[in-house]
Amino acid sequence: MFAKKIISWYLSHKRDLPWRNTNNPYNIWLSEIILQQTRVQQGLPYYEKFVENFKTVEALAMASEDNVLRLWQGLGYYSRGRNLHKTAQTIAGEYAGRFPDNFKDLQKLKGVGKYTAAAIASFAFNESVPAIDGNAFRVITRFFEIFDPIDSPTVQKNIFEISTDLMKNTEAGNYNQAVMELGAMVCTPKNPSCDVCPVNIECKAFENKSMGKIPTKAKKTKVSNKFLLYLVFEHNEQYWLKKRTEKEIWANMYDFYLVEIENLEYEEKVQEYIEKLKIEVEEINQYPVVNHILTHQKQQIIFVKIKCKSAPALTEGNWYSSGEIDELAKPKIIVDFMKKLKKT
Ligand code: SF4
Image 1 (cartoon, helix red, strand yellow):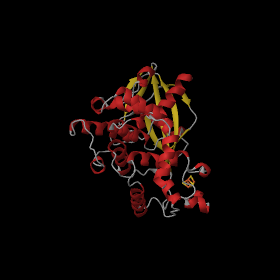
Image 2 (image 1 turned 90 degrees about the horizontal axis):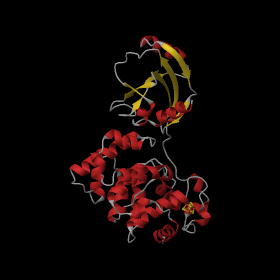
Image 3 (image 1 turned 180 degrees about the vertical axis):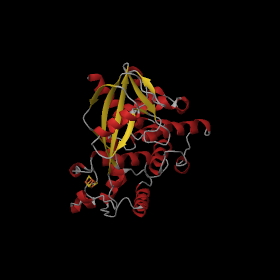
Image 4 (image 1 turned 45 degrees about the horizontal axis):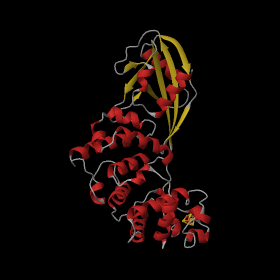
């Protein structure tokens, strides 16, 4: 009954999203990678941009990494953008442009975990395998009133088995979409709309009013603090930026001269670098601290613009006009800073 009820609710209430009107594995894979750790509203324009620029997996494979990262710009988690590109190249090269058509083989692709493989296998190939994202975990644990922590592998295995049973004899893609849509739209983390939920009569958490306590997690995410100082060197209306290396945070993206600092007292550091790099200062401008929150880290970022009388002799990097910077792949904090700079 659970499956039947949620599928019929889904078919009459679902949001009309472009990747739901196709069973093309390329489009489904693209949407799933874009939507990992990203809200639908934020991800939608990116999906449209990618589909418009790269109509096929081969077209994406042939693009330059700079071009792919530039389109990805603003989504964060840039390793996903790079994996997306590498996987497209693998599929175009090793798989002759055809996606694997089953759950097991899909997991061999870079950046495709158990959830994403299940989503593609069920939406594109109708394989009966549950796609369990955070929304689905919430619905199932509440419906059965499972208090066990969902970050435990044993609990995850149990929920996978329960879900495999629930979806038997249903249309796999619709079942998976239905559970996730219910979690996103009705069984929300805070204040779920149980009154309009299609399965409220059988829901154990609703019966016992325990929705607010489920799901649970065993481990608390530890958040560390990081302080970053960007020295924005300007000379002749050009700015110095460097492409970061493969192994660094924001790999292969462009940013200003970066100095990691201990706390927000950065003035001495600025002076130290001015001396160290033999900068002839014409003018210094400081900007308000920017807070950038990541899952495991709270970054506080300071931008100090230093107008130089002559171009400092920096070994790496290059000088770019603000128009040229628009064309470079950059972390979102740099995009935001450039917008701020253009307004001043
Ligand atoms: S009744 Fe409430 S808690 Fe239960 S599945 Fe529906 S929305 Fe979630």
